Image (cartoon, rainbow, N blue to C red; front, side, top):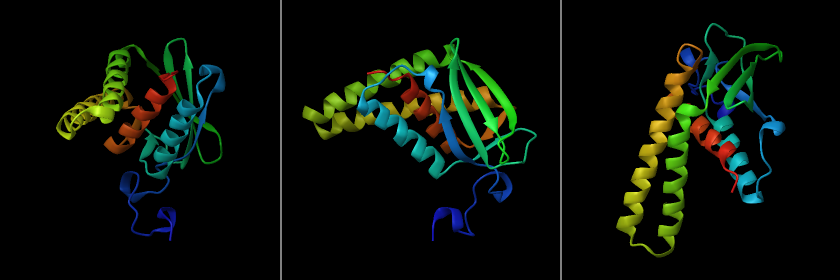
Length: 171
């Protein structure tokens, strides 16, 4: 039995399977060419997000949804389509509030990948705790910025933040 067929599954608001993303489309014009490993990270971020999420534009219950993401003039555009592929919501978020967190997240990830080569386990764990803290901070910022526009839970915010980072990562 897959997650989607599980009758005990409780995703979305009110246990409503309609309150979820089933497709994510990245605007290729918004993305710089990336190395194969970065493209892989983007695909993994999308896979993880689609695997488990809670997502519903405020005031709309015609999901499940498709999310089209684009970066337009330093803004992140969430273009949401309903189950009939009709646009039901568009949200533009300034990327400015995310810049420092994304930069810090990349820095600590680089430190982590360097540390796993030679550092003792206690150092690796400390760096990983810092990485998770910054990731949580980015997730909370995303939830706050989407508040009143799109309802998402914390885990979905974490996965979306990962995808936002992967969109910025050019190698």
